[in-house]
Amino acid sequence: MRIPALAVLVLVAACSSQETTREGYYSGLRPLGEPRTEALATRGWLNARTLQIHGAIETPEPGDLILPGVIIGYHFRSTDDLQGEIVPPPVPGRCREVLLMIRDRRVIEADRQPPGGEYLRGLFDPETELFHPNSRGVVRPDGTGSSN
Image (cartoon, rainbow, N blue to C red):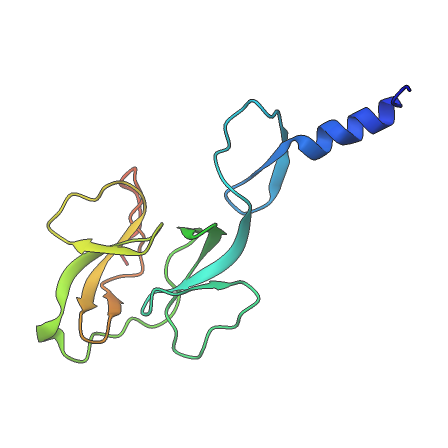
């Protein structure tokens, strides 16, 4: 039994992995032997106060402080700086200075060396478990990022 050339081509295309760009669009097929750099990515946003990730289809509540980006599995990567009003914590005395690691939403002490990846500087309230960023600017691994 001979397999038509078109069937072979469809089979090869279906078995290849797809790579996504920073913006979440497919950039084409990749050979099976090459390592994957990312899983399927979808647009979304991070609520910078609650640290919850939401799909782009969800509408933020009024007053939410959002960070637009791309959801990659359980991880997040920003595509812009924070949007919304930065409000100081209600009880600053109980907050500690931290770095919010955007990729996995880990909060680490501000005096530690960031392990790499994007982060925001701010205050974390352990009682309410809310993050209060100091600025809108995301600090990127290469040291770039705005400080507004």
